[in-house]
Image (tube, rainbow, N blue to C red; front, side, top):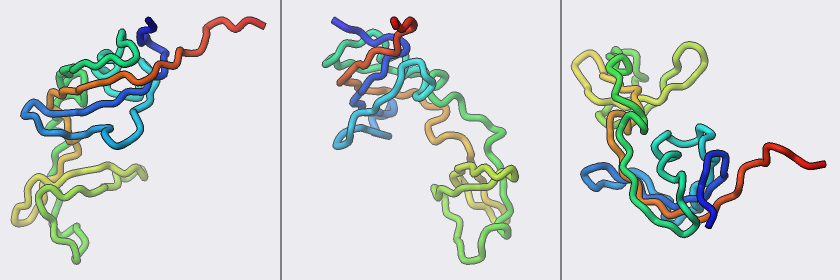
Length: 151
């Protein structure tokens, strides 16, 4: 029975939950997630979780924050002057925006607090600092490219 190893391309159905049981993502009703194991396409804990699985196997994995989106970083939380927002925009907690970092890159941020003169923005990934739980089902394995190719 073939088992997943680094370099394989796999297809996985998943249901991602937080420790309180709330769902943050799922492949239900969509195509399974396809990625190369060890290729840096998914969080490290997800890569590790599918390694060794066989087609049709189902399991639940628990991924600590350090193997997911990392700890929440205080330096990614900033205050932004309210008067710098567009005049026709009313900032509200939970609103997601894109900021320009000055080098032409867009940075997704979430409003976490609205004060009198400033708005508190959080550029951490929404799942940073959280342990994640995934219910997995391995649908397919495509072996990696052979290291030696015969002529």
